[in-house]
Length: 324
Ligand code: FAD
View 1 (cartoon, rainbow, N blue to C red):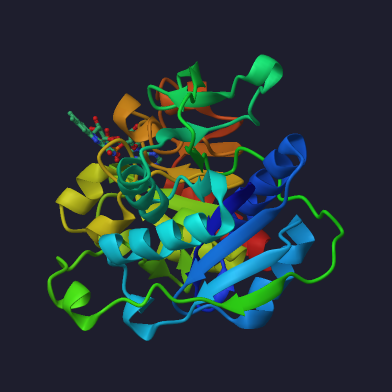
View 2: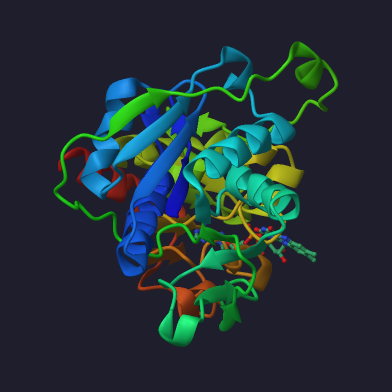
């Protein structure tokens, strides 16, 4: 019996959220007195995979089939299910990313397992139970869930735990294949998981996000958001009306109906802080709000607030950030 962690790559490196999942998987394996193996698919550098040893992963099964460079849910499920069977894995760990959530739910059906998404804690295993805590209602509440089936599938909430260095050596990387046929790809629906970047930074993985709202008046003023993001090495985002107005592309829209982000720092410029916007950003570690209205609801969710006109405040922040 072992723990299997599915790790995702981006630009050949392992995503930060997958390093968190690997940390989680290793800690569960230690609790259960077993080892943690990872499975990786598509374009990932082998030395990046070997470095998963730092998170305590002992072995990585790597399917480098180039047809898997594009996400095809059923094909991914087949690879991971075969790896789980080979390793006799009873606990499967994912990041709660778009890909992780899509694949995790299909795997739960295929393996007759139970699935818990948005998990924030290690399992409580006293008395043979397996209980995890999930973040629910857009982070407003927590629910304890008992996973009772033989196979347990856990999607770990992003930024809910620190990436640990277990101090182990390099993981061994083994070539792995689920022997997928071309027909399985031809028949598969084309699925697009948003991997869009701003300035080379993946929004869902970004450490810092600079986000603009309708208070910026128009797309011609977006250089303020972009320049601040560039100075901080951040990704850019926006509120829903900004995307609806075509000031920014829809893949930058964060919130209940957009992307959920969980950076260490979220800077909101000219955004009121409606509940639907907060639903996508309230997992951020630190929130900074810049708004000229001292009564703007976003200030209630902010760690730091600047009451002021964005057109005065942001240029000063850009100069300060450039001087860092
Ligand atoms: P506004 O509400 O117009 O706020 C602009 C803010 O800018 C104000 O607080 C104002 O004081 C400030 N401001 C103005 N000028 C300046 C200046 N010069 N300097 C500094 N501050 C200034 N919204 C999302 O963002 N994401 C979602 O996923 C989402 N999903 C939704 C789903 C549903 C079902 C519904 C009904 C709504 C959803 N919304 C979503 C919309 C949401 O309710 C708000 O309408 C929206 O977030 C407001 O965007 P905003 O803050 O950019 O604009």
